[in-house]
Image 1 (cartoon, rainbow, N blue to C red):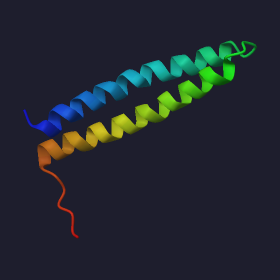
Image 2: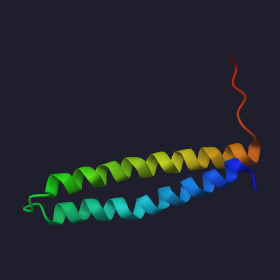
Image 3: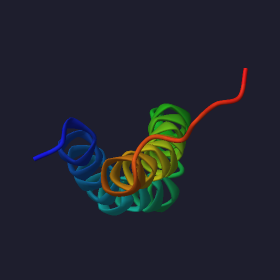
Image 4: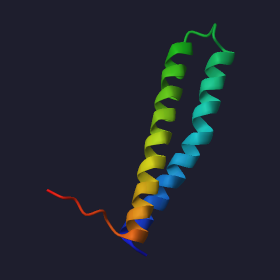
Length: 75
C-alpha cells in the first residue's frame, strides 16, 4: 500500500473520531454552564473541532495523492 494512502486513511480515521468526540465535548460544556471548568471544556471542544476539520482535509488530500499521484508544483 502506498505511503500516502496509509497516512491518508489514518488521518481520515482520526478526523472521523474527532467528529464524534468534539460535539459531545461541546454539548457537555453547554449542559454544565454553571461549572467552574465550563470555559476550559468549551475551548478544548473547539480545538477538537478544528483538529477534526484539519485531519479530514489532510487525510482526503493524502488519499488523493496516493491514488492520483502527487501534484506537480510549478516553481
